[in-house]
Image (cartoon, rainbow, N blue to C red; front, side, top):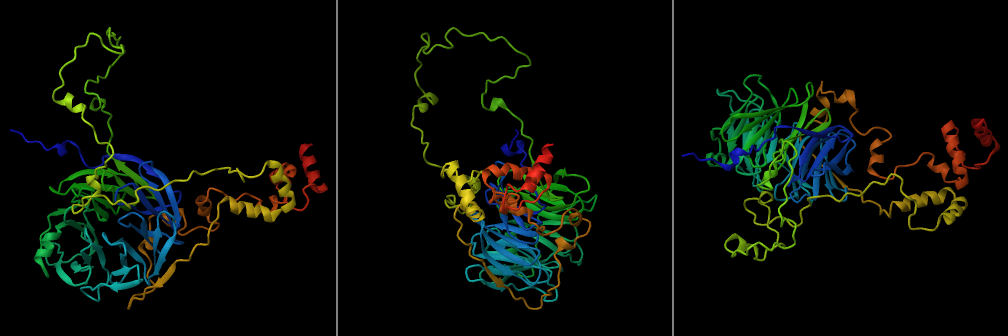
Length: 548
């Protein structure tokens, strides 16, 4: 007797490259929203590019920071984004409008920002050489979390799956479990390397489903634990990891690790090359190694929340890894047959008759009788993959997609305005001033944006001269290819608006329409436009000489 599990036939992990997402500027970090419909990418020029992951197109670009974006996190409902940049600033953004709600300035670089999984009013921040900080956005207050050793402030932290506890880890391998609301210590243990030697904690990641979490340590081993066992062991416990994952052959150090959406697989990105290792969590066996371009270094990895898709970043480009999709037409039509060559089809006599006179009417029983029943096509059942185990319904206010406005390359100045004759006379009469006025009105009325509130976070004993690892890492090629931060002339500003500024904008407004052709020839010849008199003799001479 053989027993087969249905899921074993379909592999739930990616197997090959499935294209790239080019953000124009260099990508540094990425994260999916809770449903996997939008992908936010932080770039080295300070912009946040939000991709519609279904259409693989850019849905929005937020000019967020001046310096590179080093960490991003979506709120639970998808309406907010929190970002950190290498100039020690943490900002919260409204995704729909692209406006900044709040800013916080820290004394040292930020390694990670994370929303509370159930309360978007709280944000966990991990500054360099400092204890983790929990921000309360509503009143701009902060709480410094307790640490095990005041002399060791290389601390990483993470909320657990529902935000009830905060797990912190230091450079001596000590893990503390703190109650989120009171910051009380409820459990602790030390990660050891088999003997009494300790190893530094590099990151802590939780699965979206289940109670498992992983710890990436400096000894190049990924340890998987059960959170329930940690709480049961209490303070100074000695829990055993469920799995120890490592590359025994190459002794690969890991840059970034995370769980699959269903928590059944773990992916780890190599810190030496663009390579992704995928393990099955329950067994601990390595099932796949995905190799990117040789010679590139990996910066970030994110697994899609509900599908077997991975996004990885190297050399400023987001690579997508997915399963090989094989078309199976018999899944739609069971009697479908693939033909190697054309076959002459023999038509039945009654095949195209409106009513088959020879057909006998069978009695409706079973499935045929059920076809006559009324089918409910109005009510929408919640999608199980989008709901947590303690939720029955989906979030009705969730932001799954962004509206995309089409970019118009040559927009009409006033499509519903006066006829061209009236525009011509107004151009000659009003000159430069009216041109500027009309350009601003074509973009629509824009109320003055409220400047976001900036809060300075004071942390005791934190050095002010620390450099973010993104800026200090050598050999990653970022400094050679593109300069970090927004370039002078702000190339990105043109991209943000579909209405690109035109050349000679200030002078062209004083030209009447019949002089525009002359101005075009002058521009081609490299002559400046004075904007005073388009029919000056010297300009005509240049045009005549060009014709001769």
